Image 1 (cartoon, rainbow, N blue to C red):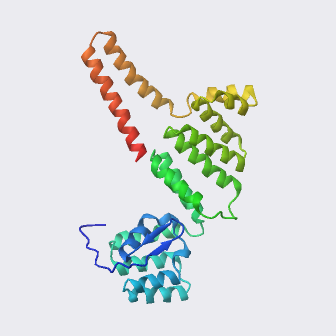
Image 2: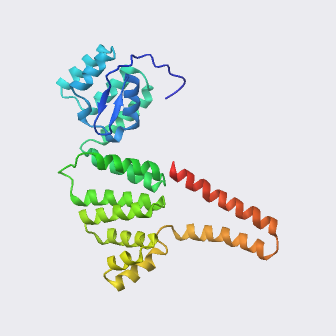
Image 3: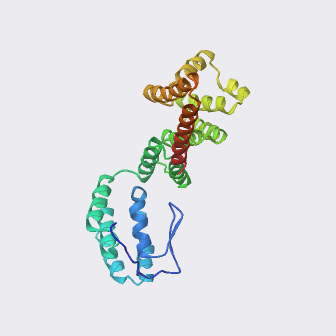
Length: 274
């Protein structure tokens, strides 16, 4: 999107309600923004008689007629999206074409898989608050009977990872328990045991760890699981540098270094919580 855009379309008092994300849309510009920002969640359900009626309520009979014609011709979702965005002119031509190509790459892929892929990417990028929202959105949708139990078990597991990274260990444990009930996989149990250990609930931790040998094996693995060896050496080096200043009696330098390191950790944490 480039420059300043003035939205001149009519704002209807009877919004278009999008069930998948529980969102109300009041104008054609809002619809375009929603489409662009939620491209992974779109499917043919959005393009129906309700959408045509919405365009008419917004005094965009031209779009309503064009979409109606495309639906009768069994046009794919990519062309439908490109048509709506082009008619409204809320995004530039290059942006519309980029979105069209992206949609074509989704063909044949269930919307649930696209949603999970977005959540997984956000999790890897340490955008924990956004990842949580994405997984919750997926879990609030009707269960797709064509997706296996492992798929939904992994969603709950990943949501548990998000909560753990946000330091909500009890919420994380509940997610892992749900995940294990749906899909009793050993890796999910390992995550559950780990977060139970972090909650300090030793009794439940011991009860859950039925195999003492396996429990010891997992505990050793956890020592380097969260971060790479390079990450650990980097942070360990920063802390060690601070301690060396203290040991040399350079108190001012030590205080400044510790403050800078803490400020860095705070900044990282705030970014993760956005």
